[in-house]
Length: 594
Image 1 (cartoon, rainbow, N blue to C red):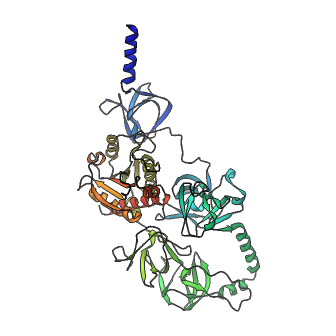
Image 2 (image 1 turned 45 degrees about the horizontal axis):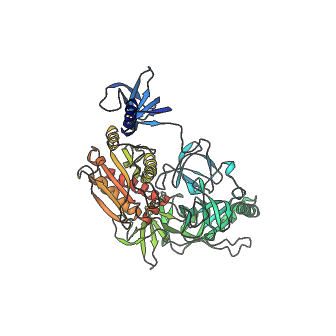
Image 3 (image 1 turned 180 degrees about the horizontal axis):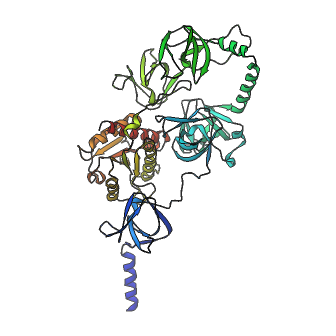
């Protein structure tokens, strides 16, 4: 009889669900909020016994559901909400000793991770910086007492154990095609981890048959050598020094004479003469196309010219230098490439006037290039293949290196001091959907959230994530976070799936037409504009995180992992950056209108 009783008890232990408290090994937590209630039990219904303050640390004793038991200083224990604390503050995105080196001159340091952010400094080739963080195409660095973001493609790792003879010799791969895939291994079957574009340069680390290993995004990747030009930067520097030694002289009159011998011809229809070397300089006159000018000096891609008995500044990209036929020492340099813009996003509008409300003449696709004719405010005037002209917004294209970059300034004012809660969908035991190639939704949503968080933080917004790691957070607690911080907006990020593999596109959801719809529409418009994916509209959705949320909220399905092509696109760095930019501008537009 005793054996039967023991067997019955054992069966009960096995079959009854395990709702017990899980006791942890030695771990610590840090409080993320100004004041956090400590309760007698794991739930909001339990009595509050004390409060703890932001950044205070406590030993973690146990966990139950979404609650954590902690050790208090007075030998007491209590329970706190897991979504308001951080566990294990020991991991960093980079070690404090990681450094990178600039591989180009005048590498801009920006306030945030994107070309739309203000330039706060610069690095020159060979400068070293400490790495703080990296997001897709951008790296956050500390350099010369400044902290900012730089484009990862112009950096290489500085760690001595990663240097190679080719890297030390500054052997560079310059891309010679519009778009070239970067792969994880030297094989066409390996995973695509990113893309490079025409003219971009990366340090070569090693080679294997027809493949080159390059420095890419603080790690390495492989590209096919058929589509690159190999450049020896060190030899170029030696050649430049040699030329300078032959041309430099101690006679100041000789120097002055060299300056006054340089002439150029105006290529723009009408070229403005300005009071200083900047587009912000006062316009003091203009010069018609075809007129010759005498160049006195150059500064930051601007020419100081002799003009009307005085001096003025003109943009060098609209002046073609004339060969000095009567100077036997003149070196015949290669002709400068045409000034162009390259389209970064499919479906980019080319308009008949420099305004977002002007008529769209044609839509351009990623990789298309057009000659630049002029600059009008924040717009480039370009020439189309049929010889007609159009305008493209300067802040959404990439101009050739000798043309000034147009910034979309001032947009951060609409984001400054806003409280934004970003909700990376799923997590922990809830993996969300799985793509055809194995992509997990729960992982991609965190990646997207981190990119957006950095952009918004750089603009002055206060950003909270409902989860930063692969942990489970209940729907109820996600909404509680939105309420706790009194969020100005709540955005839930997801990726979609269906049994029909042909379905694709972006869908945005709102619950309350008065509270939520305008937010969902603003975000959706920018998402379609930046990704050019199928427009599945902003529509009503009866989701818990929307329905129970008192704050303006939207749930975004950012593409279908069940669609083979779309899954590949979603995992690309280019797409993730496009999503981050779209949500950044969508939020700015929303706050601007409200």
